[in-house]
Image 1 (cartoon, rainbow, N blue to C red):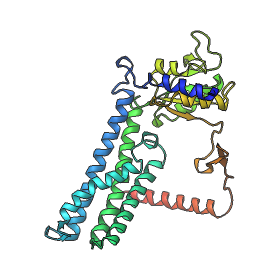
Image 2: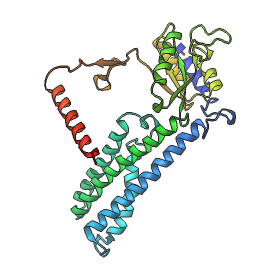
Image 3: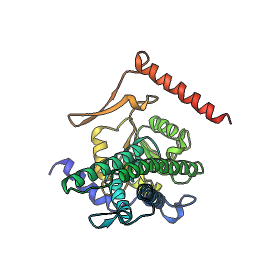
Image 4: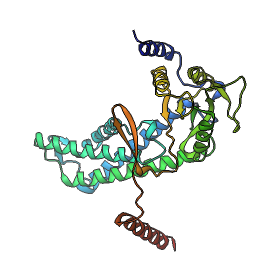
Length: 324
């Protein structure tokens, strides 16, 4: 058995003792670390269920009025409207639209909601074609776009509510930063600049911890690079953020990922790139390495002009609408 196999086996055995769930003494003001994630998912499911139900019923009323006698293969469209609800929600689940890593920040959440709705329409078209089902096109033309639009608006409203809660220190991820002292301090500073992202650094692990050491920004040092699991237990962290620094080699990072396997603790890696626009960064796996490719900034040409024109038009329309 190789050294890597030994480390992996040991990590899995030790990982079963770590849950990442905080104790009653370390709960946040409203709910615990694991509880708030479950609660927020339930809120999203409730909102999505209500929106899909309302959208299908509006489509039914708009297409057929009060007449519920219209049926498709013996099933009334009123019943079809109710059946669409669990199918649509299933598409959202399959599309991973409820995973916490995509919720609260970025455009990926909205992309996944839109993609799930598109797959629902495509699947309905394929099923109707194969089984020769004459589904009313007017009903679909109303229900699908309306439902998708309302789902996106519902997610936006839920995100605004989440950001409001995070402004008061609630519904946040507890982050354990691992790496060089200077780099983890910079990481904590950058995460603190965006409180609505919900990442709060509660402790760090550095190569030379020292007893009772505290960094300049007040973060407690909870251990060395080989004591991450113990630090996770101490800090009740649900996320481990790895920054670069002395001793943080690819082998150490690989062993850390094995140690955290099965613990429910997320592992994220912070690259040494800062202040680079998100659309310019692409991940391209090469030979097993996740290489970050940074595109050149578009400072000249057609795209910047189109972008500036769209921004100017949007600002003008917004200003005119707000005049009353």
